[in-house]
Image 1 (tube, rainbow, N blue to C red):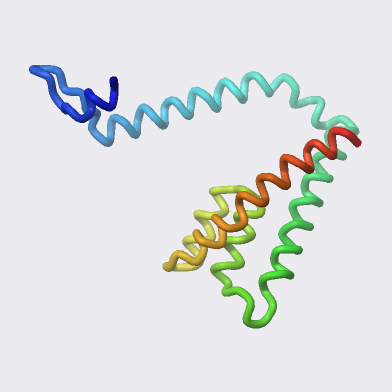
Image 2 (cartoon, rainbow, N blue to C red):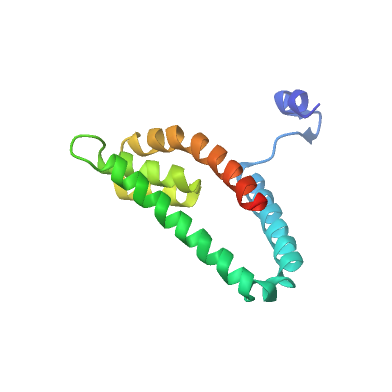
Length: 139
């Protein structure tokens, strides 16, 4: 129904299209409420992070992140293999983090190499994370 009403744009005095600014404010507000709810829900469990197991898991996560990035850098930074932009995009994809993709894009200063490398690596990295999480849970 929303697709039909959006296509009509207006029915009499009723306008069915939101201005871009309003749409953006509503999306940002929704994200803010979601993050606040997640933060309140998980804040009570923050003390368990500082326990022995929590620090070990945080250290293991940092170790895995550094190891994966070093592996990607080692594979791609050889002579003639990949440009700096492609290497940054692949590292961002390996982390599955859009925030690092934005920084890599800014550092690359143009071109789509960063996005292409991210798009190539991201699916494999996401599947690997899912499989590794299952393996860690079993161990």
